[in-house]
Length: 139
Image 1: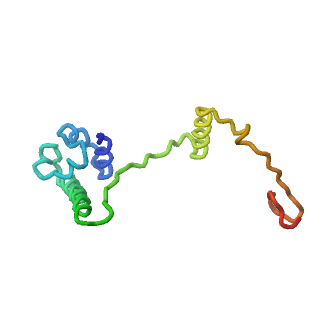
Image 2: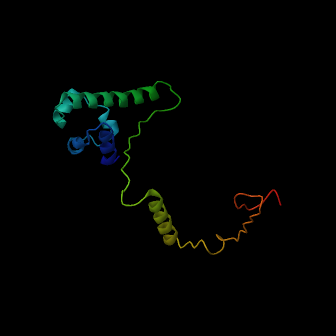
Image 3: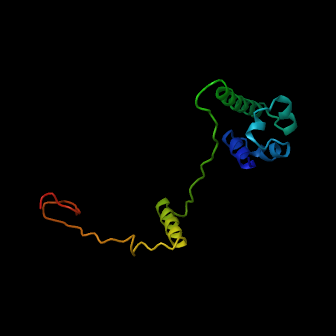
């Protein structure tokens, strides 16, 4: 597993500033982190009581997920850690999505205005309909 999993795990605990210390001390995998105890926290450099408690509680949760899976529970439980990034405030999400789709279509040489992606649709609007519809039930 890569160190980014450890960073994401620590970030979820609000302790991402310890990432390099964890990696430097060989805690580069969640399986290894399941074995962390008090002496390991000293070696890693986790000194504050709050941080130590947070790490030990998270380690306990990791251990429980393995115990639950090994105790005959039909579905194994694997914690998944991820972080949500703040969206770029310079572009709206719709504009960003449009840009991403446009770039992907260009990269894949897809032209939506040509067959097989293009088909002509005739929109019918009658006096009975408030909105234009493809098929009018009143006509």
